[in-house]
Image 1: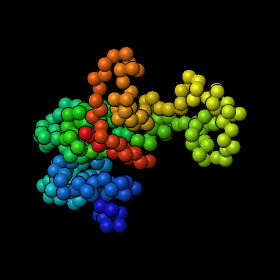
Image 2: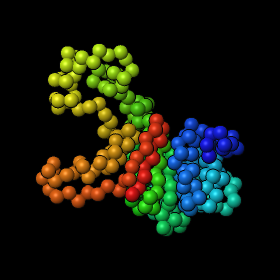
Image 3: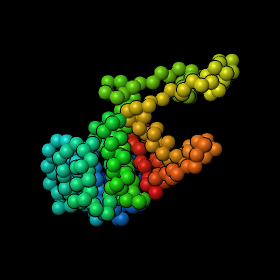
Image 4: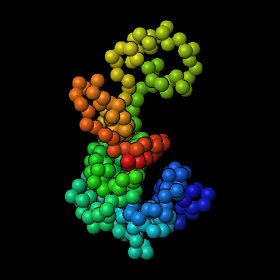
Length: 241
């Protein structure tokens, strides 16, 4: 499925910018994938693309709009809302009672909806060693999105120093004694929306360190469900243990 080998022009999909990492992650496992689910399918072209790539897999799509695409019999589409957990439960029971190998969320790009889908599907519908992908999480930085919020790249932000000339005299600038490092001032962050969700997923990756008994004053029972995470500018790959 690499950009040089895969003729995406045959399919009505906007995933061209994402093929590089899909190729890196999916090519080694393509012959082992039996069940794949995609939330949000645009005009349905991505399902045809996945059907051609994963030659042994059933490809299931969900969209809030009614979408019809020609297929070889391995593609099935459900109409409904990504946060409808009763629908997600039905899809899993109908199509993948033993779980999906891959789940991709390319649906609303809103934090609440993506949160609900992730919690339900990652826990209940993704196989062990499966891959869950959240696309377009960067919409959380767009202030015109309902839950989007931009950031201020001032002297307290790492990007400010990476993209401007700096003399590294952080103490003189008050970044050590008065900034976010030794003071109680929070780092600039997103608590909500798509970016906030990605940061909470990172918390889950580190939950065993975050809940050590010496820090919580109680015996920790948390064991992370996540093996590792790959984050790119537009994709977040979450690998289940």
